[in-house]
Length: 300
Image (cartoon, rainbow, N blue to C red; front, side, top):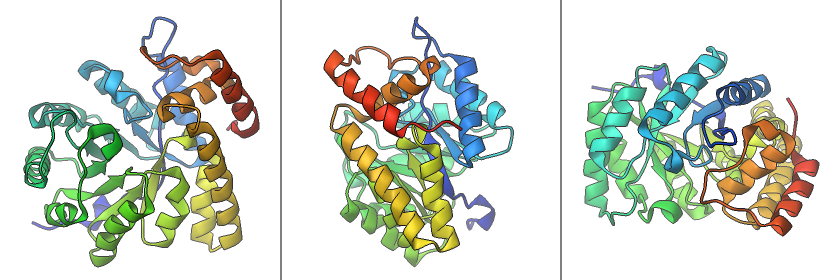
């Protein structure tokens, strides 16, 4: 069984926030508007990921978020969904429930809390890929999971007909380059860049696209990096990337990145609400976020 070119997915995606009301319930109308906002900027949607607070969502809420995002996107842009759970069993269960909702592909972080060998990660992803009909991306984010997917492990997993690539959010150019080397070796394995500071580097070195957290705040800048790169306008692509990287450096210095992103977006668009507890943002930090939001937030 071989992979088909029809499963190719690329371009800029935004790891969309999950809006909550004052009682920490999903704010459906606000989520729909955020999806349409990204679609208007030309960005695809990655739902219930790290910036979507998947770690704070129930199984049923993850399904609801995916369904709402697919409906709101209305085929204008593709929707990807995150399905990673601690156990292989639960990851498969979530994937099977989500794959029928109209998402183009799913992505799963490595199991967290359990310290996994590379052999265990291989077995985990093979079982997940075997169980699903929707294409699967690996998702490497060791700072949050405690488990690192090594490039050689990804090379082995790339042979599976339903594993089409990886989202690398390790945060370093060295990590990203290890996976980009695989993508250059084989046309059926794509890399989606996680770190917002490395979007242009990734595109220049063979990445198919990116999944961005900061795109929630600056969707036009994110799309501009990709559009300028595709158009061959190196100066414009570099200018957009510099703007994006500066925002990342200033905002992420203030605290837990997903919480900082959501608070900055909330400052510009209050309807997205706050992060779910136990996240708290000190007043002095909040004032700095407010200033950054005033400088960087883009309306679409």
